[in-house]
Amino acid sequence: MSRILKIALIGTGKLSTQRIYPYLSSAGMKVQAVAARHRAHAEEKCALYGGRPYTNWRKMIEQEAPDAVIACVGPDLHYEASRWCLARRMPIYTEKPPASNAAQIDELLDLARDHRTLCMTGFKKRYSACYRRAKQYFLADIGSGPPHGMVRTPYLPGWWRLRLQHGNAQRVGGLRRPCARPPVTYRESGNLLLYDAPV
Image 1 (cartoon, rainbow, N blue to C red):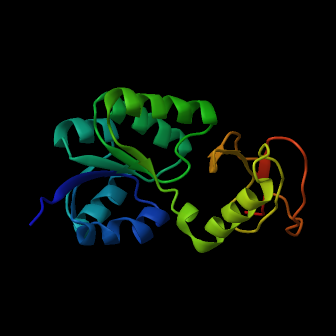
Image 2: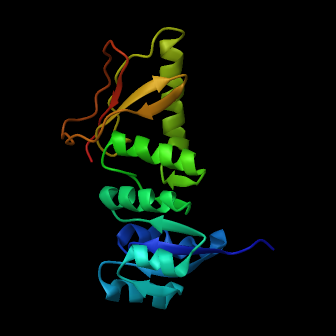
């Protein structure tokens, strides 16, 4: 039997309550500790899933020395916790978005490479059928020419700017305000694909 991973979690909100905590044991993981701003929230999760409660996530990681960290809070803390963990060669998984801007994401990528430490974000939608079909559509459309085009789709959560590079979509911009207009597909010249949709 493989070893059970000891996990320290940062965050006790709705998403982690519904999508992370209930599935850890079936994925071969054990809750070792939970950090939340309010101790009562951490204690509640520990009563349900095990582990020790903390209000300071750094102190939790230093004292518990888990196998990995999961952060499900918000982009500012995802970035801060990832930087801190990567500098200590501590693997970390965050929910999306991993940071507040592309420069911070680039910094995390560099840290992960430099320290040879896993840093993962829950970008799971890229594997869904509708995303794969959209990618195939654009790759077929651009042929051997430079990447170009724009599409508006209701499937993405907000405004995202993407650029196709060698068949892979990469985020190069940030979130913008969502719009209330109905989805419309259109094209434009340039090296930019823009997906936008109401949140």
